[in-house]
Length: 325
Image (cartoon, rainbow, N blue to C red; front, side, top):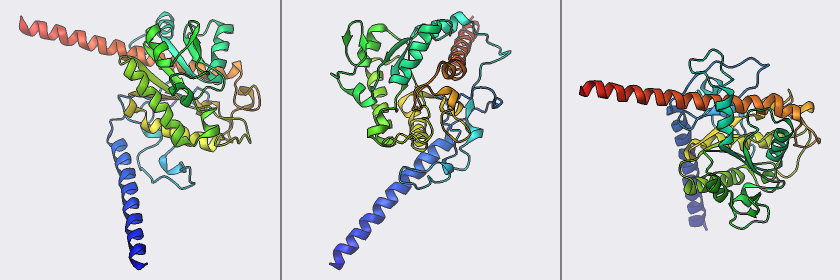
């Protein structure tokens, strides 16, 4: 009996050591990444926290303030927090100017994959027509989850060109260059944040497997109305779920945009004027004041980055030619 007790104690200590080592490695890897510091906009501007997969992971919420789903506090990571975030707002006076036509073309080559919250944005764009993202394609459906999206044959797949098929096949057929993904509304009702975020990353990996050149951006899960609690769908758990997405996005070659923060009131719930049903679905005001500026800022930053890289490549080629002469 004593021998079994001793063996159990050894096993528990071994497991604890593995978990501790894993946490240490995750924190160390995050801290060693190269960061980009950009001044934060004022409180009146939409806040867009972007984690470019080529840069460091960043969060508006320090690890020390985020509880795990068991209620425990994640170990402090010292430097991770606001100073490591790449805050992007629509640039003014930037060296590389981006026209509205270029931004429209960016979204015309993009597809949005998600649930009814994305479908609401699709309907808003169809009504308004003037927002720069209005030319995007949507593969969004009510009650759709990342788990549904992973199934080869699922009745909830959005209809594309008259047929239902996995989104990675639709993306291949349309030849999209950029994919925006947002799930969580229905995922968290039946799963915890770890399993739900794992499904999102499995979907991203599958999309990349079939479409290796496509760029993927995760959009954060949005907040819900005050006192909403359905399964794990509540604002504290949504914050944790978003952090899981943020913390592993770069490992799956994906960017991350946080629109959750800009939709919240001082209590951490979705603002009254941004909620259409006392649940999670959003008003046109939310889409026009938060979504449009956030996505426009992201598209602008991506186009500027591409233009800069192209200029640098041309400069290098010219330098090589002159050297050879």
